[in-house]
Amino acid sequence: MFNFFNQFVTLLQRHQGLLDNVISDYMWLRAVILTNATVATVGLGLTIPLAFASDIILGKSDVLSTGSVLGALIVLLGFVFVNIGATSIPGSDSIQTRRVESADEESPQVENGDVQLRSLD
Image 1 (cartoon, one colour):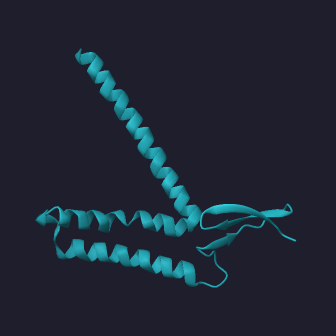
Image 2 (spheres, rainbow, N blue to C red; image 1 turned 180 degrees about the vertical axis):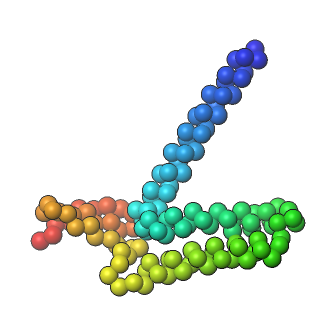
Image 3 (spheres, rainbow, N blue to C red; image 1 turned 135 degrees about the vertical axis):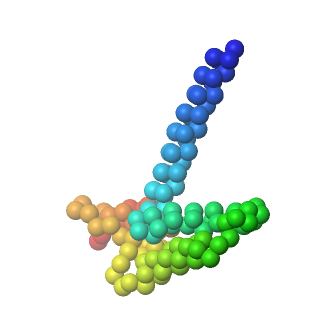
């Protein structure tokens, strides 16, 4: 009985690990498609201030220090500055619309995450 239970738990852990990795990779790839690789990767760093905020909400008082508050604010400001830079540079990929030129007659147009083919005529 114990051996079956141990194998069952191991099987569930493997499936959960695979599912978690696939979902997180898909969500990161979707973020890259909707914005760009820099904004999506820096956005992953937002887990630091979010974890800090959740610790405060849950009442863990040992996380409150000058260094941890300053670090969380720096990460948050970095994300804000990257997003401002990504949308304000003329000629750069826009977050709303990105045109990908290709050698054939049609090129994909990405608008709000939906890819549509439009003719270059």
